[in-house]
Image: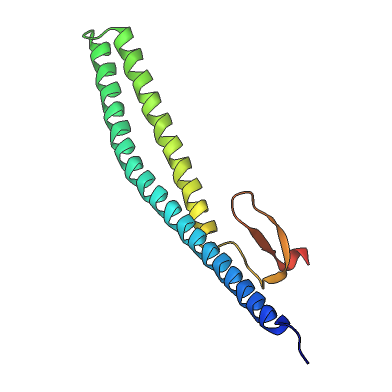
Length: 143
């Protein structure tokens, strides 16, 4: 009859485990929200940067065209043409890198929002562990 507080200890243990699981859940939700916000901000900033780089590339294109016209009329040297072409190539390369970054940021945002699954999720069998986040559920194709 007398259990020396074992029942109360079991209740306290269950409450502590419940609190621990709640804290872990809350941390997972906060991490997911942080991932979404980071990806969204990164995508927005890269789109703004891309617009500026696009304007810069257009200006470099116009400058290269003008220098070629001046070169053909004898008013500019070949060195000036090559310098303008190098500037244009650099601007276009930076613009292409920005477009790749936009695609990468879009994929990161889609992943952070949970995109990419096209079937039922079996949360009992994790598919694997993502190095940056947490275990991902298995898809129907792997079952």
